[in-house]
Image 1 (cartoon, rainbow, N blue to C red):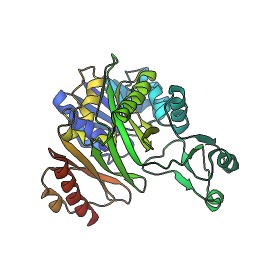
Image 2: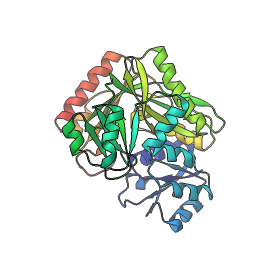
Image 3: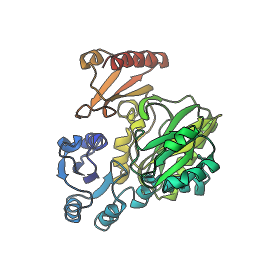
Image 4: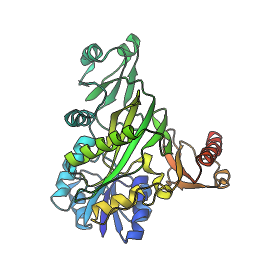
Length: 360
């Protein structure tokens, strides 16, 4: 099958690598001439809003998907008239906009932080009156890895805050830890769930994911219940991720990602079927693969600068993935996965990797 991917970053790259064993070929549409996925298929370089290029793209493929949620909704709807777009455009309309996410969570009865819509600085006093002294301002769209966020914890923070476009104020949650649930849903409605994982962020950017998270059955059931409700409400097909906060044992939804996700990268080596292969299986109407972890796993992102690769390669039970990107502060350049059969061994290997990354 010929699969079209909107976006040619590392997620597109990993989708293509996973698709080779399934016999798929790939076409990427991405405006960046140096898109990491360009070596894994045909790269159409241009705007996501160019009708001529979108038409050419659709004519080359059998089914279309996205590696990130910020493709314009109108472009997705245009493409959906030409070829199947999976997940459907409605899923991206929700996943790319924080207000839409919060409204869906509320509709489905999924716990989430209280929020207030912002259109200008004049809305900030009303947001503070509703949410209290501590809240987080986030742009409604195009915010990721901590970008487009301002934390308000004092009157001075409130005075300094600047609203530059449609934004949302979310009540500040004093959480114990961050968790995420990744699942995959087939066209017929079958769903499979990866283990719930625990995440640690540094300056808003994911640094480490640990698999499986140490959670109760109630938490595990809640996470799956939330994701199932979201997927069914959107008639979703493909891999879906939900990031959550744990507060006094209860899970609160934070963000929805209608795509393969950074907190699932461990699955390439650590699960019987990776999130990337399962996404492709779902959108190409193949049976879903087993999502079980094959051991204790962890994933650490390489951020900003490339580490001493020679030192990393000496660490047993680890797998290095580089994305072919130029160094830049805050940029994800690659990741390292750890897979072991003993939890203590996994922890020890992670510490070795962290030591190398600290000496970038």
